[in-house]
Length: 169
Image (cartoon, rainbow, N blue to C red; front, top):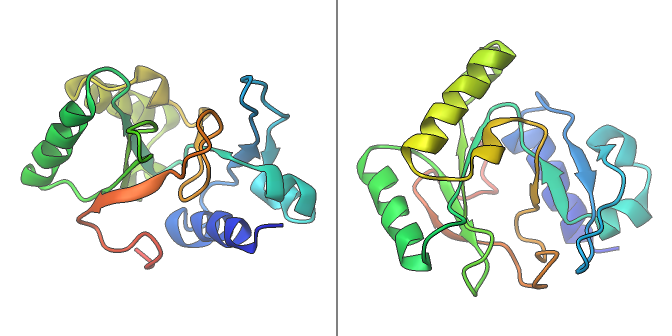
């Protein structure tokens, strides 16, 4: 098993997610078939499952802006706009510009009631013209620093103004 993958997933649970979310994991193949969703805590004893995982659920305190429409240049403009507006985030993409996700970690989202959190996410996602499906926690995204299920390319950090992903927030 890729020990880096376990370290990445553990880091998301303990350091990024602060243990607020027992997020679910799964794996997808190039044909778009997804495995059963299993929680992080359940998957800990399943090395074979962790080794195959390439998808994770959105964290309770996470806002993800996914710019599926538009060009890679549009994505870079969105990054610049958010940075200039004072947002703190990590921006990811594969080398060919897929999996364009901006991750905003805001621990105050955890304290909101589910509906208000969803409404807030929906407002911000619409404001920036991103994928509305990411307004809920129950949505899978490719795991950071791992191979994207369709392309086999690494979802890599391309910009941050929040500090290194592996630093504790």
